[in-house]
Length: 270
Image 1 (spheres, rainbow, N blue to C red):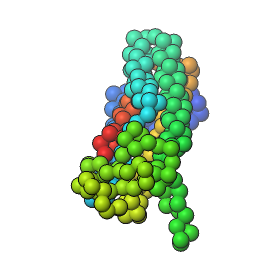
Image 2 (image 1 turned 30 degrees about the vertical axis):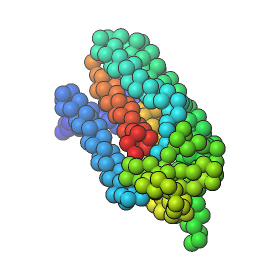
Image 3 (image 1 turned 45 degrees about the vertical axis):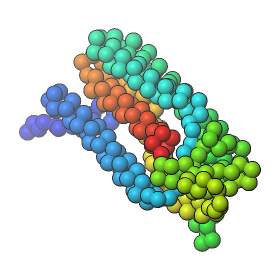
C-alpha cells in the first residue's frame, strides 16, 4: 500500500517539515512564523521598558551624551539593511553570485557593528559609565546602569558626557565639591548627593535583561547570515525559492530597528 509522506529528507540529510507542502503555503507559513517570533520580541521589549519606566517615576536618571562611535555603529547597522535587501532582489533576478556578495557585505557590516559597539562600551566604561556589578550584603549581585557615584568620582564631565535628571529636569551640580542639588534649588543650599546615589537605578535590571536579549538576537542574526550564505553557495536558496532569504532579511531589518529603539531609549529619550 503506497502512502504519501508529509515530510521528506532534505539534501543535507535533515528532515524539512515544510517539504511536500504547496509552495505558496510553505512560503506563507515560513513568513508567518518569522512575523510571530518578531511580534513576541516586540511585546517582550515593550513589557520590560514599560516596567522600567514605571519603576523609575520620580527617581533619578543618568542622561548620557552618546559618543561618536555609537553614532557610527548606528550608521553601520542601518546601512547593512541595504545590501540585505539587494541580496534578495538579486536572487529574484536570477543572480545568485551577486546575491551572495551582497549577503557577505551585510555580514561584514554586522561584524563591524559588533566591534564598534564593543569599542563604544569600553570607552563608556573608562569614563565610569555603563554597567557595574554591586555585591549586596546578602551575597547576591545587583547590576547597575550608569552608577552615579562612579560617574561623580570618575573622569566623565558633567554637561559634556552626562547629566543627572529627575522627571526630565537636570539637577544642579557644583563641580568644585562634586555635590548635587535639586533642580529648583538655585542657591544650592541643600546637598542631595547621597539621596540621589541611594535611590537611583533601582530598576536597572530590566535594562540589563533587554541588552542581553539584544546581544542574543545579534548573535542569531549573524549566524543566520552565515547559514543563508552557505545555502546560496549550495543552491538550496535559488531564484525559485527565496523564502529563506526573505525571512532572513526581515529578521535583520528588525534587528537594526531593535537597536535603534534601544539606543533612543538609553541615550535620547531620558
